[in-house]
Length: 359
Image (cartoon, rainbow, N blue to C red; front, side, top):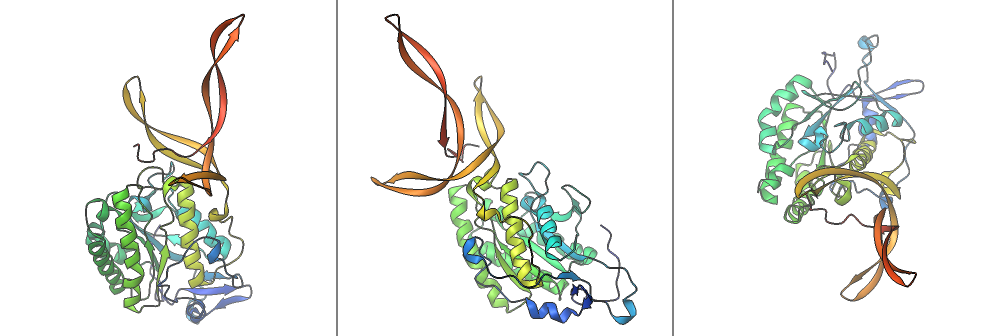
């Protein structure tokens, strides 16, 4: 997407368009912009009454009211998760989020040097395998070229996979946020507590890192920085060890939307809440052996949230868990004319995901 100069700043271009016309940007700042040090936690407990539907648009000066409307420039910034690895279309959370925002009253334009996904608005700054260090090295150029009004930052996964500690990764993230603020003084920055790896060692560091993020954001005392909790995207929400499948990306889109809606005052029916769904298709990668050769494949199945019984330390208890109905062959013995014969039949059983580390 091209970026053209306008006669107003990034902050001045953010406003609310009511049915009768344009309201000033000050109304937006009055609606939201509050720091969320406790993070934007998904799920039923976070449901609150929504404000009146509004459309976020540029607030034009009297001399510029004849100029064309320009949507809010949003830069998705991060690594392969932002790019969309794990999704067949590489749409990541971006397409779902844009659709939710539009239904909620906010029109956006994704900006960045990369292009992945479906549709026409597929720009982003998601770079596969990049650490915070590598992203920071190119960041000033991207911010200068694309001048985002909003930055969606999900970074740190590759630092942790490469061995950085939680505190080291948090210090680098803090410096990156300061770098964005210096280059874009009026931009709104949404900082993610990252999704949770399936690898146990990495998951433990992910959790420690995520606990530090609200603290470092609170210390900046900047009401245009909001923490958004993406850590609940985990387990079978991931296609492989680190990247969401499309259902996981839909959760990310929902979490970003909830964080942005509190700042920009969007509302209305933007589509189903994935955290309330009890049935969903998920695609999981796995390793299998065919004719003695290891191969990787992706299996897409319908998963259902069911009540099941688990035994822990000899104690049985009921839990809610995602399960899928599988057909398997079962051998059995039967006596025919006085002789035992072996036969097979197909049985259907509810099963869990099995070994999620089998990749």
